[in-house]
Length: 251
Image: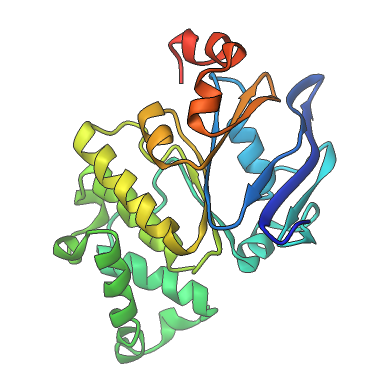
């Protein structure tokens, strides 16, 4: 693996009872970039994400992260190495406050599995860092709100904050702007740009304006295969991409 690559796959393939969802995908993600994975519905994007984060095991192929073969590792082991996924469906504790959610994520990052039984003063030691993360994602005024009360876009920001609490080197974002209005999309796009300043981001994203604005490199999947790769201008002019993806009306 080249020093400028943080993630690489070789012939990554996943078959389900005769159906090939991911077919020989060779992906190369450069360190410090925002890399988008796009394609029509059923192209294999989410399956590819599940393979990278070890929620699925490949039928064949290899996955390298920072030069280390992680193909057979468990999800928690991959996360500890610095490859962390933020899920499409918000994964927070709904009846805890924003501050409490981020603080729990910080406890996990510290490895304090018994912190639930420790004194409040011990847990309060994490408040400073938690508030820094909350400020980073624009949620300072919502710190005392229960997660369930947050508007949808703010809840996604909270999810990103809890992911950042694990201090990942590489962040995988699964449809970060799905279901959002324009204001929330703009807010989350700016947040992604900020958090990518000192880490690598790989994202599955349906909104092409977000993809064009944020991404250094775009990989287009169709029917489980890589159809094209390059910057937005290059990919958007590819006639096969326009037919298979952009011309379908689906994202």
